[in-house]
Length: 272
Image (tube, rainbow, N blue to C red; front, side, top):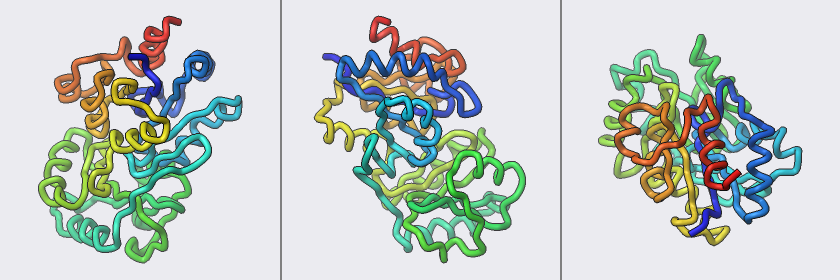
């Protein structure tokens, strides 16, 4: 069966480095995809607004894209939002309280992403604070997170990269019946609503466009991509992914992200 929808993670997967992608090559691929009634989806831990800014040069050239943002908490077509899942005030309080009492979170900061902006403690400084301003739109530093007037999509913690999986496991053991925790790259761990992941987000688009699982191709490199990489037959892990990802997913993209591995694999499928 032919592919109708292609979704790709961004950091470590589609992007080559420093928020860059091969624009001319991507637009050539999108042109061929359009003739075959195929759609491209940016599926990322980043917020949809950030993704729209990232791809503004291509969008401004007349190309349509869809978005699964915040690791599946928000789903948008090129012109409208279809879906969003927020955390309740009680869930927020539970997670923030857990973090305050966790000895391994002593120097951690909390990043809250909402509909209107991104919120961090005004005590946040240094490299982590710089990362927040780079990857999140409309960042505001606040005194008390629980007093933020916004609908919150998720909470992000940042730990050393080699500790991410152990913290994901710990959070799933604690909140597994109510929330979903996932590693999202660069040492970040996201806590989202129950059942929220990229595969669930893609299902919203599949229902909207009437696309079967067998008609979906996906690319990823990290733990927050596992649900979609294992759901779809045409799921490709990046050769630059961590060993635990290589072990879980058998199909590999033809090259690493810094060498346009996603675009090369799509070109191979399209015969261009």
